[in-house]
Image (cartoon, rainbow, N blue to C red; front, side):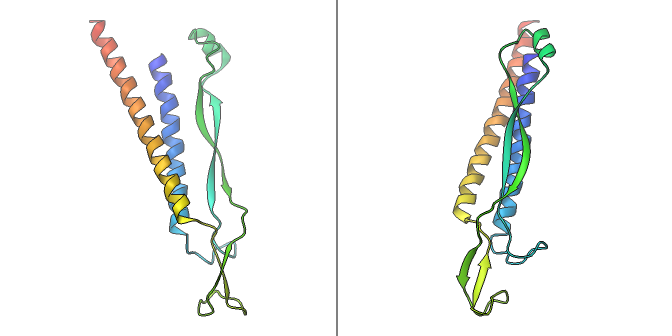
Length: 145
């Protein structure tokens, strides 16, 4: 049963990191978007994770894992950044105001790229953990023969 719990925990992390990578991709794709349906420039989004229990207390007692407090990852919110948009001077831009100021998204491409690398590495680490759990379960079956 513990092999399956470890796989469930890692798979929840895979799903959470996939959502994070999608949000980061959206941020990068809209780094120059000055007009959205809500009005104004695109606002950077960020994923909020939470650690939630893997099972109920009763299940933990049955699995003899009471007190270990195993937790999995859950996406609880996709938060819009509240920082003000960047302002640049470009009187030729179609979105420029009467002073020639254009409000640009509050997306920093370098920060988003670093976050994307971090999310990718976390995804790869959890994929490796799932494969290792699978290999351990197969080895345990081989021993039992």
